[in-house]
Image (cartoon, rainbow, N blue to C red; front, side, top):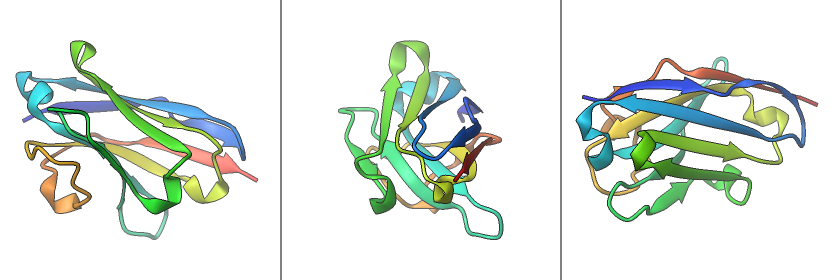
Length: 124
């Protein structure tokens, strides 16, 4: 398994940017598709973005396309989520996750390793 620790959350205003980081430990990181999910109060955890390990293929949920960018640095065992143009509806706890599947899956059930989450609050 991969151990994951998120950082970079905070309180920002609408229109601001944040970059979340997810530091991974474990030799399997390089062969893990990495994903970001989020969970708002009272709602289900939902997919945000994913990036494969082999060729960097990405996928995004429609609500963040054009605003968020997922990337990874295998040398640093780190995956990032650059969030621009933040909106109040982006407020949630953001979780990093890993799966051994080599495709940018949006399925929460496919991810077996999870971090503890980092809070993002966007005020209007």
